[in-house]
Length: 357
Image (tube, rainbow, N blue to C red; front, side):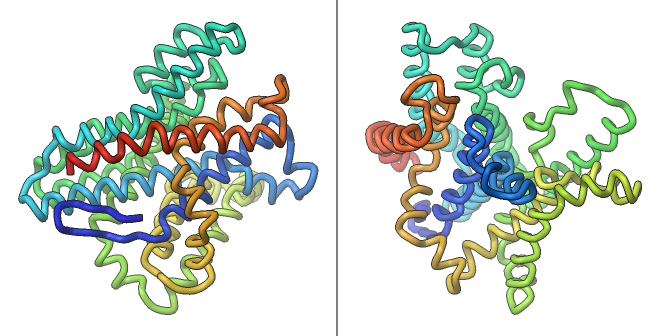
């Protein structure tokens, strides 16, 4: 993937491969949820891991905030300022067209009485507040993650009005905010706050991506060497084991259980730090099996389409009610509609977006 700001060009060849793996987690989660594809084949511990859709979404959060922060830092370096107007135009052209085209298609199906979506669901989907009632319908439920991203990007660029130290400090505070919130909810339960699909519980993932961008040179100096590879594999192992460990800890060790309550498991701060390490290794270590895997043509192409795939999989992976939503032809239709969305909706607006760099 190439990032262009002015005369500066960054190449992160493995990013699309990571996106492909991220979208695999999301799709496998919904396939298992609606068709039980994996539980009939794999042991529970394997099924639980490879169908962890929220893990895939957290990968997307960290990738997105890393890229956005890198772009803003580069713009600031080249022009001594950040244009908030151009930033918001770029985000609008990147996210809105494909998303609202998807909603328009749903509206047609709704009017034809093929699907049913309530007025409140339409309202929260259109206004990027979907985490308020994400359970109210299936077809727009996945917009909870887009809602979190868009709300984060409403205020995050404002940090570039302040000095570098203030930005970094606030980013660290946002990472620590989630464990502090978990501690508060542990002693004073509040149901609407104790919702893992809100910006309050996911802000640490986005902030970790920002920190990686702010400190990537220092982090690479710290991590480079033989231990970086070990840390990369340990991060995957921890992500795999931490959820089963949390189940065991409830019965054998109060203190360990309490730590996991504060810092989360696979979807929490611990898991997000592991994702950050995996991301660093993936985009800056340009050799070995992992690099070759991420840069295969198949993964690179799937990663290129990942946003459109994310949008359309929700419609077609919705249970075997119709031929179009039955497995496996639904996966073909996801890919076909994602292709149309990317080449006919996304790509033209991405070209327009480049004019506001």
